[in-house]
Amino acid sequence: MAADGPLILAIDQGTTGSTALLVDEDIQVVGKRNFEFTNHFPAPGQVEHDPDEIWASIEKAVKAVLADTGIDPARIKGIGVTNQRETCLFWDRNTGEPIHRALVWQDRRTSGTCEQIKENGHEDWIRDITGLVVDPYFSGTKAKWLLDNVSGARRRARDGELAFGTIDTYVTWRLTGGQAHVTDPSNASRTLLYNIHKRDWSSRLTTLLGVPEACLPEVAPSSQVYGHTKGVGFLPDGIPVAGMIGDQQGALFGQACFDKGEAKCTYGTGGFILMNTGSEPIASSNGMLTTIGWQLGDEVVYALEGSVFIAGAVVQWLRDSLGIIKSAPEIETLARSVPDAGGVIFVPALTGLGAPHWRPEARGLISGITRGTTPAHIARAALEGVALSIDDVLTAMAQDLGGPVAGLRLDGGAAANNLLMQMQADLLGLPCVRPTVIETTGLGSGLLAGLATGVWSSTDQIRAAWREDRTFDPSGNPVEINRLRKRWAKAVQKA
Image 1 (tube, helix red, strand yellow):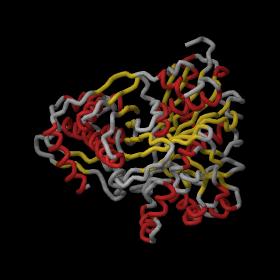
Image 2 (spheres, rainbow, N blue to C red):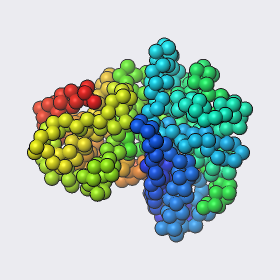
Image 3 (cartoon, rainbow, N blue to C red):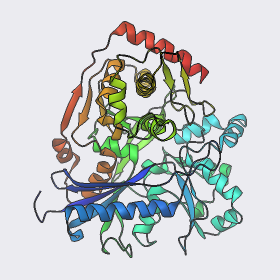
């Protein structure tokens, strides 16, 4: 790294914490810090975040990464923001005060609303417009709930007193001192309020859900100067905020999956598979979502996506709720201490089942327990459950494509677990490639900011700099894998 070269700051605001990355012009991460914050669970099926706690975690992460590296903030040429996509909130445009905690993408309180929408015959046309299924996962019904349940909120939203946004919008608004109320198409396409074909807010959807368009953000390209830092306190004024993308699309971009057919899986709190489908959306008949990957200038890239709600979060659950492990990395050692799961099947449906099943009412299930079952067997079954969930998605995605997936790029915190990655390759029967930088969600937003501010000139330059860490080649026994899949399918039906 040049001592005075340009740097990009990437802010990755996730479900359990916020990460600050500093990326140099050689696309190397020169500093990284993460700070967790509290997930609030007011009732079963409800998950909330305090926006002030989110902002405090961002401030801590940015301050820490600058202190660790000793880097002068004046070298930061742009800021990229990536985020937990469907999590959303309203706040007062004048005071910045949120009207309620943010409702997290995992929150299921609007299941009844979604069922009513489907019973009223709206599901097909909503899917045609948005590429999404009607599910509590997405922001639209969460916005409706907030407007219905916070006193005076609907009137204030209609009168333009409130701003609505996903977390990218909220963070950018705060970074720019309230100057920019903006999102990008990758995030807008996750709200259940956005027409992915016309690329604008759908009045038909905003009317159905009762969300006034006056409170919605502007939708701008994923790589553009939206505003400049102002009054942040932990950063100097005047730094361009210039990249914005939902975390999973950010990982697709950060993995340099710029060509049609290239795919990645991010193993974070959940597991998220995205495949670049080029300039035209592909409608899925197998429970996949059609979404916008990113927009550069006028060029839009679409993607197919399958989302597994619980991946790394099952490791946190084993650590925090059951106490089977003391730290997340311990699960690999514990799981390796037994040759197999001893007949245990673990369906990690702790917050329902996502693609391709879409069963919000499903709950976690552990079956096949005997007197010989140990914590090691449960740990191994938990990892297998994550890999099997991802396998379900890729099998369905291959059916949409009309052929097998050529390979998979791996990223996210749990991608550091070599045992899990080998399980994934064995199940898929495909090579799985892990890059040297697995924080690709944040990296993607940083690359977009760098493109907007001239640090990098093109996606070709970015692709040339992408580096592989390790390839996991399949080595599983096909007979045993088929048996495992059959037992898994039966357990999923019972979850």
